[in-house]
Amino acid sequence: MLTSNLAGYPVRIAIECKNEKVPIGSPKIDAFIGKLNDIGIPIQHGIYVSASGYTSDAIERAKEAGIRPLILSGLTKEGLSASVAEAFQSAVYLLAVVDSIHITNNVPNPKPHEIEIFYNNEGKVCGSISDLIWQNWLNGKPPSFIGEHVLEITVPSEWHQIINGKVEPVYSVKAIIRVIGLVITLTGQVRKYTLFNASNMKFERSQLNVLFDIPKVIQPITTIYTEPQLKEFLDRPEAVKVTIGRIRLPRILNGSLYWPPSERALRKIMKLMQAFQAGEIPDPRPFKFTDIEGTDIETIWEPVWNAKGDDKEVK
Image 1 (cartoon, rainbow, N blue to C red):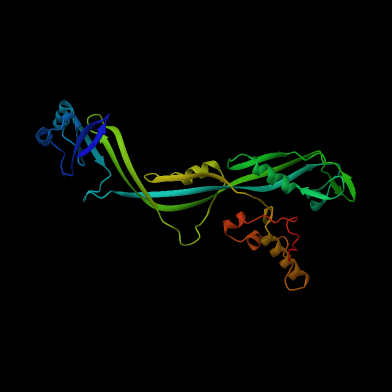
Image 2 (cartoon, one colour):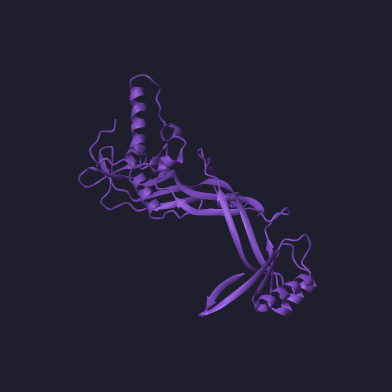
């Protein structure tokens, strides 16, 4: 029995719950009505809850008396414990991968390293194409849609290139960006109870308890290349699915490393080049992504190396 106050007046509500093997019949509804009369609770304040449903005459009797006949679903066949179903929690991280860059200028066949860097009017390095693509990514371009995108890049008017020792204007820059999804999924279990009104089978309320396992090891990552592939991966029938939005990763992937690079990545590149120059290893170029960034996605959140920060030499 529940007791509360409504507008200063005490209100009592009686609830009877049954977990029978067979549906509840009208005699038990009549017995419940008798109990309400005995303790002085209005029949309309009575709620009957059954885990096995009701006979048609029991439903009619409850409706006539003003009692709410509720059905509790979600129990196991053995008892009152909740049935358990699978649950999946997925985090979808979006990574922008630079597939190609197209530049329009007056030079027919410039070298790759010459077109990557921009200079200001004083002849000092002021940025790169990778920097411009990264800034676009931080500002929402291309959109958070998995697949291939064409990105038109606006170059600041004071930026130019120096090719073969000559200042060259840049007329247009276009990049082909492939947005991929990196999905990390945790498994768990869900226990769900649901109440339906037997008189009209309308949903009343439910309780959902979801418990996900705390991973003890690094979780595997599923790489998604298209929107239909993502939909198919996340669609798990008969399971509770929790998707944590679409999280744009803070850097882009250009070549063999995340851009802008971290200090750790630059140190690794310099050590490889020093070992090569000392004759200790073959030429490591082109660098392999796993050799520089490893296999843990957490490296993409490392602080970006700041060349103007504290004037430390990267060794």
